[in-house]
Image (cartoon, rainbow, N blue to C red; front, side, top):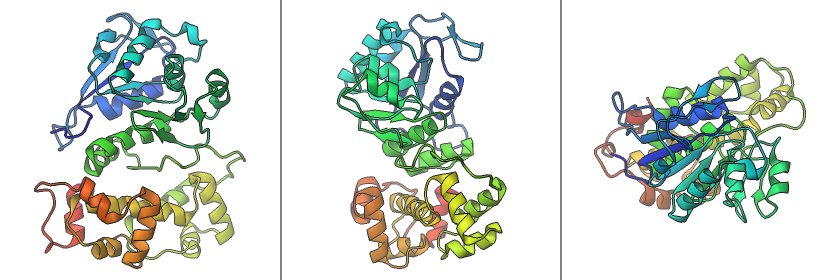
Length: 343
């Protein structure tokens, strides 16, 4: 059963559609996973200016929407994929009007990459924090000077407006929205089935200005898997570099180039993510959660959690804890209780 404001998602398409962003939004919201998991099926609809009229894509294929723009009238989320950037007056006026109506009634607007230009043409970025692909950020700012554009982040969550950077950042923004509205367990199931990380923080850099050094991606991938599977253990840059068969300096440099954060920042973020899941889905004490996630003490855990999430662990649990049979009793080991949703 869907408990958050995420029952229905409508995806409007226009000519010049970018197939990757169209695909990722369809993958997150359009597949019915309820047949093999507890993830609810969304009421997902693809619409166009005219139902049944083919829409061109950037790769020569066509998409034929089953619905017209009336499908947007009652959707909880309007997910706008990337499309060829064009002058504002060339975006379909019927679509812009439908987006304005959706915003007026409080629907959540989610854009992927250059989908932000569609929202801008509808006047929905004025005065709002937002982002788009770094390559288009300057043009978006020129067109909509009052928009508060951050070109360096993966996505920006401004409540009923979520905008994402280029390509894969749309996955991060979509999973973030699922997590925000439906919780960690649902987002993690979708992420596992997509074989992607359950969460990259929106504040991570979306690109690196200097060239990325040549690196053994498999080696770093093994290190990330090692860290992610052993969050309760203590790790140092030296020990991780040894695992990657690199010098400490080379490993640290390549890690930042690949991920946009330092090894310890990445590790802390993953520990906080695991802690959020534990707080949502178990009744383990703060001390138990701190220990299971690799924080040396409850005090250190509270410090990092509050800095990353914005509220204290106890306040987070009061807001997001599941109130159902999914939370195991206190007597069960924490690893067992977490295995319900993370195995």
